[in-house]
Length: 361
Ligand SMILES: Cc1cc2nc3c(=O)[nH]c(=O)nc-3n(C[C@H](O)[C@H](O)[C@H](O)COP(=O)(O)OP(=O)(O)OC[C@H]3O[C@@H](n4cnc5c(N)ncnc54)[C@H](O)[C@@H]3O)c2cc1C
Image 1 (tube, rainbow, N blue to C red):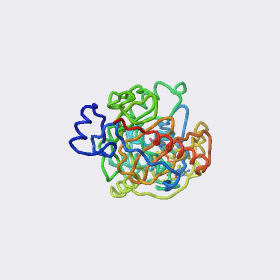
Image 2 (cartoon, helix red, strand yellow):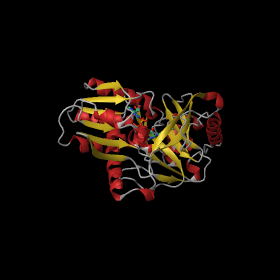
Image 3 (cartoon, helix red, strand yellow):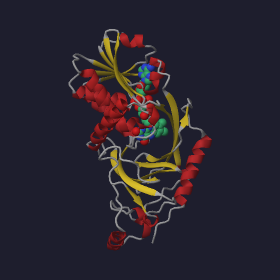
Image 4 (cartoon, helix red, strand yellow):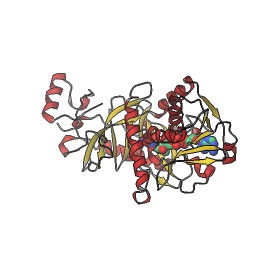
């Protein structure tokens, strides 16, 4: 994790370490001296596109009857499925497990299904995860992995009850991810520099250490900038570990596609969690669900880059498996394939951003 330090502290610290200019990469590197990302077309190592499962009225966590079974929905997380995964799954698990006995089915092996399955196991129930596709072939694997609730609802379309669910889910997730920091899950803290002015707190503890920066305090070529600390998830590593956790606790993961609720009704389990993401649109006829496509370019890893950025140029999250750059939000685009022209724009925008880096002397 890196922190901004008062300027006089920075001069003393860098003199003591005898490291020149921007070359420092210590945990206490101040914002005024950050390592730039080497964004360039020839540093792109792969590209990806995914469809965020968006609903204007927010995610769905709700129980209903399906024949003789209890069905609990947990889908529609838009651009915040990693962020809210533990939280909405906790709400769903509490809703479904009350009064239940016997094995449980979870449909979907993205971050939401896997989190739900773990919570079901932690509550003492046997679980089977059924999914059409497993990691690494889920939307969750494409996510950049920033913990920040963003792009998941339209403010005038949600109810006060939904807002209560949202706050409870965010709070549980925030605390749960904090106790998963480490290389096994690929979760770590990073200071994040965000263009604009500090946003309203979403929780008393989120976003922590948020404050505006003055122009001389940072190297970014932007007019307004603020910073805060948050968690980042290396999604590939995280989902792999979550699958291992489920299996080592005795859970089963099976590849199975469902074309209609009647096929779910035929499962042996009497409690079923629907964690199918965008798949819920066809499976349960939720026409409010729509894709918001996001495209990413992954650059050669730069372990010395230990901060994240979000702003007009897009976003940059440094991970062990590459520097993730993105920033496209394409409504109602159903083709989950990177578009070369859009990828080129993402790379060029980051190239301009980092070429404009100026480390104050
Ligand atoms: C480019 C991009 C960047 C993102 N960045 C972030 C970020 O930084 N932070 C963040 O919090 N979120 C981010 N997101 C959003 C996040 O990826 C999603 O909200 C999240 O992945 C949704 O998880 P899920 O488990 O609901 O869906 P999925 O990961 O899509 O999983 C759904 C599962 O259900 C299965 N399924 C679907 N239909 C059926 C069926 N009929 N029968 C059987 N199985 C079925 C699928 O095979 C899959 O296993 C990003 C998304 C994109 C595209």
